[in-house]
Length: 224
Picture 1 (cartoon, one colour):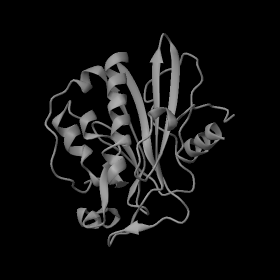
Picture 2 (spheres, helix red, strand yellow; picture 1 turned 180 degrees about the vertical axis):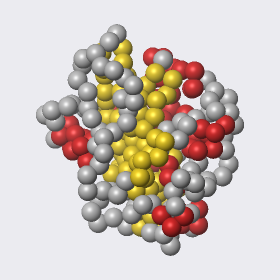
Picture 3 (tube, rainbow, N blue to C red; picture 1 turned 120 degrees about the vertical axis):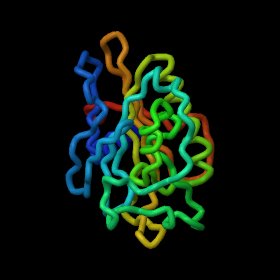
């Protein structure tokens, strides 16, 4: 059931899971078009985002992370700002998050963008963040982000697709009605010796910190 659950999430996000065969890895992390959901695909220097103007959060964020990028030293940006590629009337604002108890949780982490000033700045665009439980943001989700950087440093390259899972009875925050996800997914794809390896993670948007293995599941193209 966990495998099938993740497969359905990935299909809803347009993600294509790959089998263990040699493939062309150019833009392999970019999901396909989503049917039945508002989507504005925006390419930034460090990541690509599918922005949902109805939800005021991303459908997904995708990027490649390399060992060279992990070793970057660009200082962390300090200010969240609207994405200039998103029309003002379709964007969340920082005021939407104030006094709500929800963090502005990065999808593409700032620490993954320290290889370039522009990439760092763009990681603080509101199109790249979601309302995220504060304990999750600074705990289990952060653990996963650090593990991804370790994997990129060890293997040389990893492809990442992540984003929110939104329940049918979702709630919102702020004047712009920013949707609160019920959970988050992250899928990693890594090539080694001509073979593709994938793994997925799903974290409920709640406080708690369990072993990373309890959030993990396999990614299979056939959904079984």
